[in-house]
Length: 244
Ligand SMILES: Nc1ncnc2c1ncn2[C@@H]1O[C@H](COP(=O)(O)OP(=O)(O)OP(=O)(O)O)[C@@H](O)[C@H]1O
Ligand SMILES: [Mg+2]
Image (cartoon, rainbow, N blue to C red; front, side, top):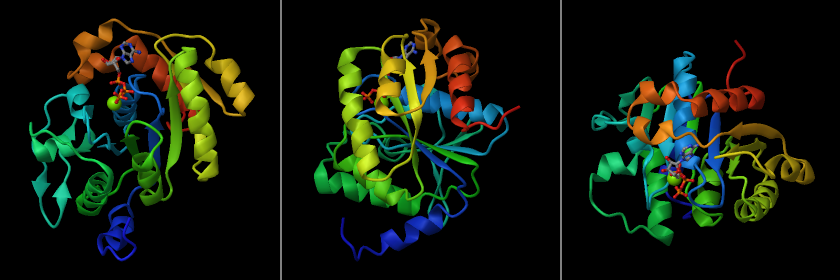
């Protein structure tokens, strides 16, 4: 990251009206970061919060697929994110269309800085972030640039996922990113015990919900799923949603 990049000074300005940033991360691919972060944004919006959703998975942006058709962003002294079901959505996919996105290393960092520097979120109670995969530079850059970001760690019940997530939790501690807790997705298994072992809060589990696939792209249907209801409970435990 270049220290003298003038865009770096703009980013805090752009995020000035954002009360809270929560990054959904996992280290492991395919565990449900995108689905749960998008659902979290929808659930918070339904509760009346002013919500944004930022897709930072530049190689496979897909939050827009979960939320459904979003109009293109509007340019007005920056880029104004379109709103879908009460959620302001920003993703490279909305800017790049169907073009392939072979972003790596410095290009990915550059795209991240650019996206954060141009997006006009306005006033938000909550900005939900779908983290880039892995525990590499892309995640660390995002945490560095989103200064007040808290994290919510997603895992499946599988040992394969838990082993990767254990490492992520250590990394998050090392870089000083607050961990709100662990959400176990697609079933219930060893995550509660693992969370206790790591000294992380277990926020609950979300079942594998066969209704999800058909509901993708339809916020109303997504909000009616059992997965959404269980995630809502976990978010309330995390203190991300205001108690009703
Ligand atoms: N609780 C669930 N019930 C049913 N399907 C689910 C559930 N959670 C996730 N899925 C499905 O599993 C697949 C992977 O989920 P998702 O894309 O959200 O994972 P991811 O962690 O974002 O993956 P990547 O690391 O590739 O970005 C998707 O098809 C999603 O719809
Ligand atoms: Mg994803």
